[in-house]
Amino acid sequence: MSRKTLLDMTQNILNAMDSDEVDSIGDTVESLQVAEVIRETYEYITVGLDIPGRAGIIKLDASGDVDLPNHMTVPSDVERVEWVRYNGEPVEYKDPLSFVIYVSGRGTGTEVDTIANLSIYNDRDPTYYTSFDDDTIVFDAYDLETESTLQQSKTLCWGQRSLAFPMEDTFVPTLPLDMFPRLLAEAKAACFVNFKQVSNSNEERRARNQKVVNMNSRFKAGTIKPIDRLPDYGRKR
Image 1 (spheres, rainbow, N blue to C red):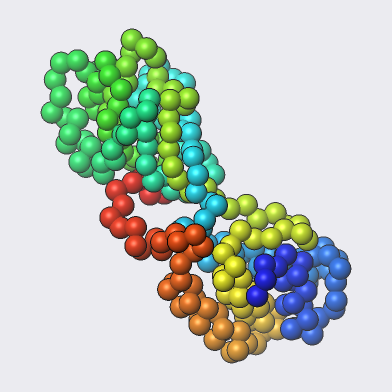
Image 2: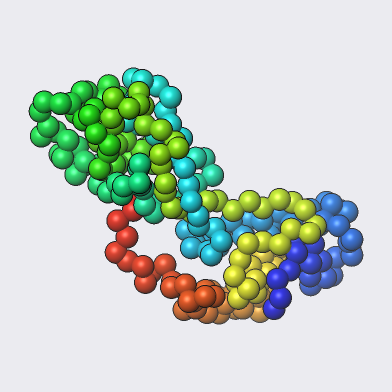
């Protein structure tokens, strides 16, 4: 199967349900409903999926608050942070408990993080980080002599961004080619249940078979499957 636009898939499903033909996803209420099911199915099958082109360089947002000098925020469209560098040096992730234990043993040369109530160094760049809420990243240090808070421009991270799905006729979902059959099959099966109140056993079987195929396949250019990348000590969203 070739990559299909949102309109192509909507027309395919409408034809399978013996519904009215359309030239745009907005032509009828039903065509819009079908397009919405396709989007929901897409979001479902891509949750946590390591899709090539989705990963890239990420900058963390600075707090801009001198009372939170060691706090930074993950951009809202980022789903997962793989690794973090600050000022050119790698910063290692610690789970929250390990992070708390690590910084609790500090003495001189520290100040208190007023939010997390932890001891942080204020005379060096950070070497460790954690997150307590999956949105804010808390670092173990910052250098007060050079900056009042950690700076966005000094961060260099790698992670996965969420995938946009505009409701446009020409939109082509960001998916590996071999996953389009699964997207279409699962969306078609859902539409039969939602709009016709009947199951489509053929499409359900195709969706299950395609899911198995996708789990055992590799992406182009030799990219390994996510499971093969373990162990992964990065922060996950």
